[in-house]
Image (cartoon, rainbow, N blue to C red; front, top):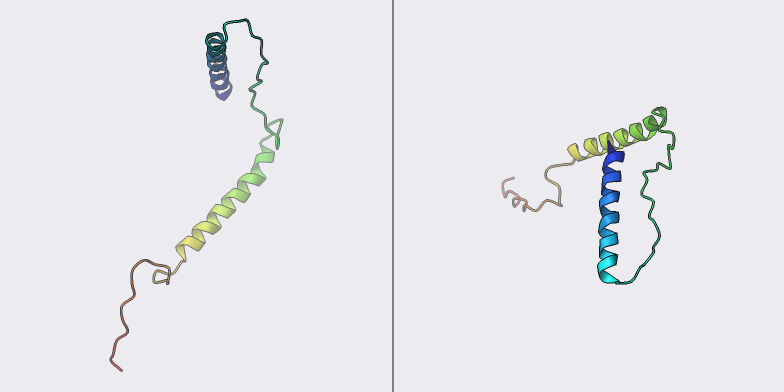
Length: 90
């Protein structure tokens, strides 16, 4: 599905680019072609077993950050609310 969208956007952009160059320069102008293909450098054959390790690492990092965020103290010095004055009672 993504390849269809990329192909459509590439076709539309190529037509707009040709029209823009035709309007900007009145003489015949040739220009290079941009190759807009999706490529994956990490897993070029898209094997699912190669996506498990980065997925597990991302999940563990997300879980650790969630645990650290939930264990933060409520009355820390970095909060924007002032702390109440100490009581004068013994």
